[in-house]
Length: 231
Image 1 (cartoon, rainbow, N blue to C red):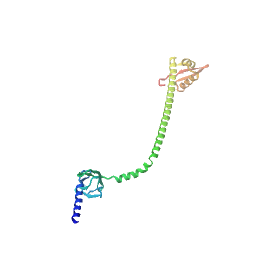
Image 2 (image 1 turned 120 degrees about the vertical axis):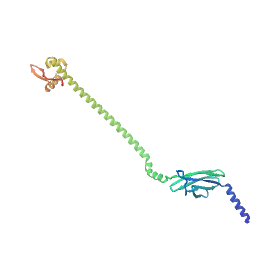
Image 3 (image 1 turned 90 degrees about the vertical axis):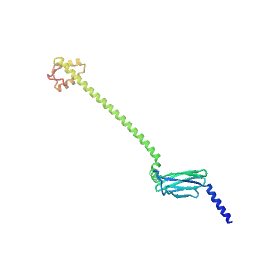
Image 4 (image 1 turned 30 degrees about the vertical axis):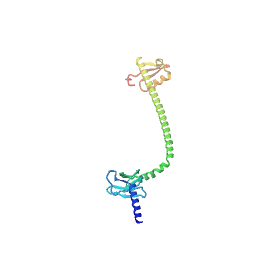
């Protein structure tokens, strides 16, 4: 009986040895330096765990699919490995910083905005449309006023220029006629109304360019003897 028990134990041990595969490797940090003291575990049944020495680890498992995880302080790594048959498999792990806490914090901070995203999106579109309408209206009004002011300014300049030309014409006419003429002569020369001629004469008289004398039913205009070229 005792020999039978020993034989069964031997068979079971031999079977495990035959059908077990080996997974081993090394654990590195992100500068590719071996990490000593990293905790490595594999999702076997039961779960196996060990602490690396000189960055090395080793597990024996049967065929199957496993996840191997390694952690050292705030660095971690995880890989899935498939053992299709018996043999030796090498899997090196590279540890990277864990951003789990930062991701959770960022998620918590962004959650109010994510929850209100549709509302904020609609509000943003409405505000954009309102802004564009106001902008276009302002441009339209400004352009209208600018064009009106430009037209008005041009009109005034044209009137002033025309008036100066008319006054210059009266002065030249008087010069050609020896410095004197009647107001009736001016009307005939320029073909203007009596009111227009009277205004022009009054302006020239007020500026001291001509003198006006009443004679009978008309007026005699005399050009003053001074330099009138600047007018």
